[in-house]
Length: 430
Image 1 (tube, helix red, strand yellow):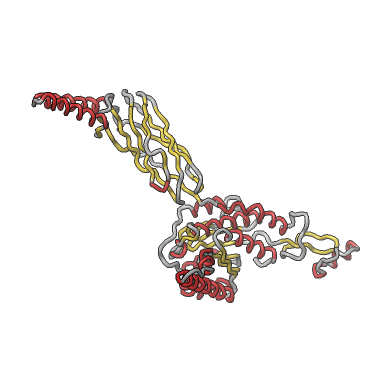
Image 2: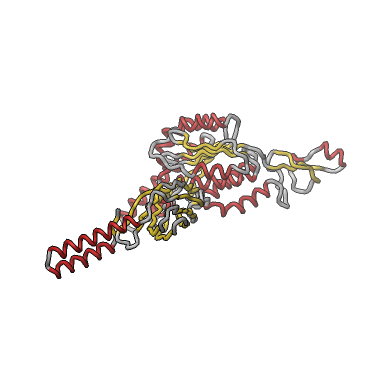
């Protein structure tokens, strides 16, 4: 039961009447009338238990976009329902409005739309629906909670999609679909054509030249149907924020751009998310479905405040990638984590696969390193220089072990990783 503001106002009026009459019977009469009115209101209010609730609407929303879920409230009773309905969601779902006043006739129904503006990735679940049913005098109300389960998965936003047209244009150029074929790149035979000045003489096909009575050269194209394994480090270093965005989210954005590009190139893409255990796995998805599968798998992943296990990472990679492939490891170039974990095992991985380590650099370090305004700024600059030096040293250690290293700010990392993939493909080094 819940009392309304009208009940409080009626009680105040009754108190004034009792004070004016200055008699006990007046106080008793006023209270009796008020209690009777509240009781009648509760009796005449529509019941909550008979109500039937159902939902429909979005089940997936991109982070940063708006979705909606419709709650249908049916009143099968013989009394009209005058109520306030609160559709509760977890706070990060950004649900609105908080409550809605409805009037549902007997045997009728009403549809309430809840707008969702989520602020974080993951699964957002609807909590209970609270219904407060008022009587005709609106002095008191019945109140109860009803379950109406629904879940919406908030997907990574894929902000780097804007880079995709430019990368696809370069891919078409590399793949021979552009007007000008690139000569001497790739290792898959494409076609024969007549020799022109500037062609590499090593590409001349002498047998074809003898048959055609003209000098013919082979043209090549980058390899297709190669395998790419993207590994997301979900350990403690991925929880750090750069530019207000967690490193893990930037890594996901880079992984999505690379997956979209590689799928168009005809390569196979797999995904692992690892810290001390495998948090997500996408293996064997078709090229048309891999982007959807990766987005769906990455949505509920959160950074774990534990040190990632390089042993688990290496064993998981080797268990999936039994043949040579391109392994993209998205992690932080943290000196302590790399030297104690990844570095002792990276030689084993690079001996069997082409390994690329991509990391999110903090542009704030460059700003701090340039500061010389006062003593505090000088100390901050020294700390920034030390941090940059450590990252450069770790990168050099990895390169000496045959690993390609990409260290770029959040806004440039997805494009830099895509360019590195295209460069490897053009050079035939996948």
